[in-house]
Amino acid sequence: MTTYAKFKKMCRKITALQVTIVYLVTSTLWIYGSNWLMDNCCLPSIPCLKDIRDGVFILVSGAILYLVASRFLITFLYSEKQLHQSQHRFRALYENLTQGVIYVAADGHVVSANPAAEEITGMPLEQLISMSIRSLKGKLFSEDGSEFPWRQYPGIVALNRGEVVKDVIMGFTHPRHRRQCWIRVDAVPQFFSGRNRPDEVFISIEDITEFHRAQKKIEQLAYYDALTGLPNRRLFMDRINQTVKRAERDNDHLALLFIDLDKFKSVNDRFGHSGGDDYLCEVATRLESAVRKSDTVARLSGDEFVVLLSTVHNGNDGELMAKKLFEQLQPTVEIDGHDVSINASIGIACYPQDATTAEGLLQCADTAMYRAKHQGKNNFCSFTPKVQ
Image 1 (cartoon, one colour):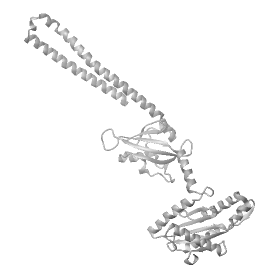
Image 2: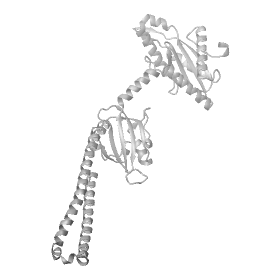
Image 3: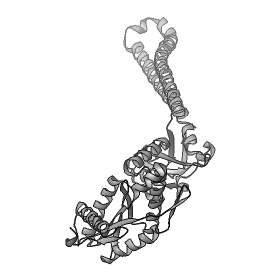
Image 4: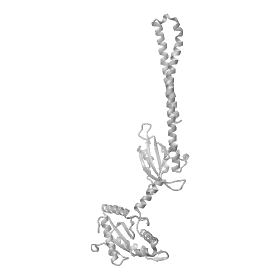
């Protein structure tokens, strides 16, 4: 039975009970009151009153019952109409919302969902309703691509803790479109019985796939080099600052390699900007293949690259990496059918031996790189006070 039907039944019970009580009270008062009047007042001298007493009682009690019943009936019909209109408005809103709406019972099973939830999740309503939200474990992922932590699911948090959870971003693979989608989820616990644990959880989901893609594209343009896809100067400076802080906290060492391509201008002049771009992209690919995942390769400007080694044991690790980079850059790159060699000068600076700040470390590596150029190019040089 629906909530609406239960409410109607309750109203009928209340109205019938009230009318019955009024009838009984009126009958009792009339019978005993009329007898008292007949026996104790001057009314006994009028015999006809005794004959019409019952008829008068019926008329009076009927009139009173009519007034009482009419009042309650009008109130009930008006309340019923208002309730029906409210239910109709809610149903229209519920079914036409662009946001998905899901109601979850205390046991974690879905008891209701609107058409938008079906469209966003890609699951038929028949499958969505009665499904347990615990069955979603392992199917949702965070923005970094990792599996979304089970205990942080908005619905689970709202059910277990009775807390409102808002603006949680999650991704999933759409079962119909077979593509990655992103949703923003809110969960609000509902308390009906006065208990500490919620009786239901209201969950709203919003499809933010297009917004998420646009945001990622903006971040890509703001923090990554458009040509090579490497972190740009802005992102690199953020990473090196964070790395220096971590190294200072953990008493670690790190190394920075500043790379400048020799004779890149001649490559650009000979093969044009298109050929120069191919040349730079090949250099970026080779540099990335030489480092660990924890390290950072970035492009600072036209032909300047940097490699940040997040953890090193001593200053020799920087020189070993420079030799490895030369090995990666040694094979020629083919541009417009011509084999072109890649030459570079590399400067090396270490934390904390050479500098204790990100800006100081970058300046020392840049100074060492120019020293390598003066020594004949296609070479590397570690920073020392004599290099300045």
